[in-house]
Length: 171
Image (cartoon, rainbow, N blue to C red):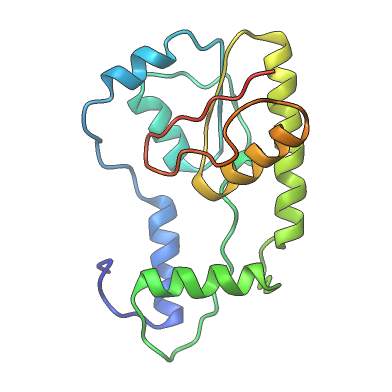
């Protein structure tokens, strides 16, 4: 299924499954990023393949792989109609999730609680290590950042949103 192809909700559900199982395309030159991360003492990855593949592309060996750092799950309404492009289904399903739709995934409130616990784990790792790197996921990272700031860490309010972006938080 192509990213521009109109899909039913049922087909979109399969598209999401395929996305979660797909390997990463090799990015451009990550040498500068890898050099920046060479001082890392502790590498945290989510259990999702794209997190582990990203770490491997950056020549990072995970110290811990923890499903608590996985991306916020997306409920998928498997309607046969209408047929929409994947980007539209993403927006629709994520909006419905923010509004309370669970449909077999954790709720928005549960995800925020998980982000708060994940932030506490990062701070615990940081207490024992000089530099901790999280190879994580966009939306979930936003909520981890909010939790880190609420716990007294210093850093940007909004995390880097582009692929291979870095946001730094310090005590």
